[in-house]
Image (cartoon, rainbow, N blue to C red):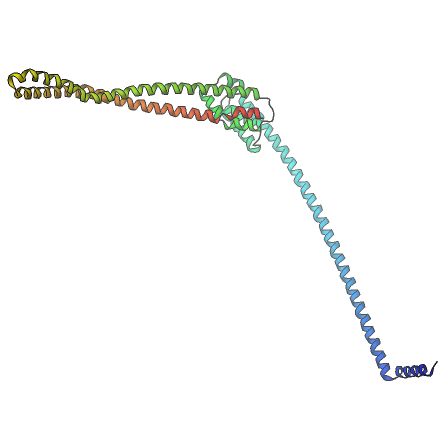
Length: 319
């Protein structure tokens, strides 16, 4: 080595073996030990946290698995109960329908309507129940009987029936389309004929009413004309001849006589005859107006029923 290198090494040796150097080395070793301990503690803490997280995740998965198993058991139990209830309901509905049609066969329409209503409470879209309820309301046990015995009252019920509208709404086959087309057409035809009769009766009633009102007007006019027709010949004609002999005295005398005769005739003719006739005509007019209003009310009601039943045939075709 060179001397310089030797001197440096000698100095380093001396420095490293002094008490200060020894204390420094011990401090550095202590610091490294503390750092190693802290690092080991952090690693242990990290490992413990990781282990705790894994345990929590495992516990959560276990709970989720138990909850899923419990949900599956609950849904399976609910499905089983639903199937049992559905089978029971179908059995109940079937027996109620059977009983309802049995009541229809013996013509106990009120009892049948009760059974049909019970079925509809359980199954609001049951087409057989709506069909049966419609027939029960019309007091017939099958459609052919309704067609053969269609009356005006039944025709109105057919076109107003909510049961019929619901049957046509919920029906799923075209099995009864032809029958119900006939029923609705028959009902509409009967109601149309009745409306035509109403119109004819209204026209006739209005004509008679106008004649009665014309008679009343003529009586009122004749109250003025009749005294004048009496007064003129009784007063004017004698006055022309008497004026040449007696002058104005004859005119006044004839006027007084003519006025008296006119008043007496008016009282006799109108108070005893025409007034009674007028009162009788007014009474008849009032009765005829009441009858006309009643007929028009029936006509309007029939028109409303016919209007309400317009969509029934279209509903059958649409289905």
